[in-house]
Image 1 (cartoon, each protein chain N blue to C red):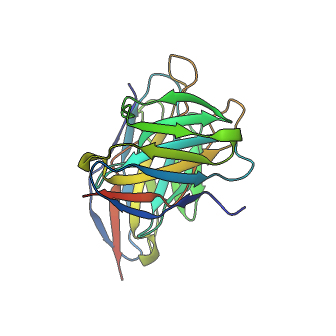
Image 2 (image 1 turned 135 degrees about the horizontal axis):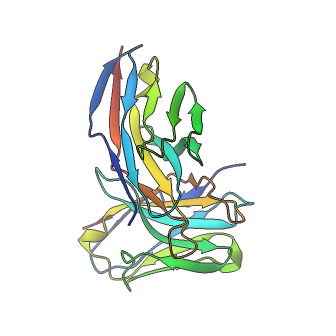
Length: 115
Length: 116
């Protein structure tokens, strides 16, 4: 078990550019989550996949954000036309469950800075 | 909606002191409760959890008891070490009233610094 991995760990971009982040969950986990964390705050939920299906999206996820999980394995989070307010830590988590309220395991995060 | 309120930090203690970090919650259903820890430069790690009333989660000397009557899940440790210095997050996961709802709702976090 190598844990949840995320790539890149850091990303600096200019306003208006597109960025894409990748998350590789723990291999046997069927659920995958994206959260955003800003300085001094707890993580806030963005979206959730069960296998390849995206089952829930937060109102925080504007139409500039899109997430995919092809084949129910890794996931990508893309932000189009980045804005300075998108600067944050983007966290991925995964879990295994069949309806129980199981714990989520987090990756190290991707820190985004939009200049 | 769901919410989690943690005591505000920072909390500064001497080594071997007793630690309490208060956490209270509001939930529409019957949540599971978690404590996560974030060490400097690292990702969130699950510290402990409890899934029903009166359950006690414990790990690495930390404990928290699910108190439904007071909607609380306070984190305690009898003797802290310098290596416990980190940010601690209380969180809940709730089915909610609309069916499946797997997201975690976090508190703002409490920074703990333990001095030798």
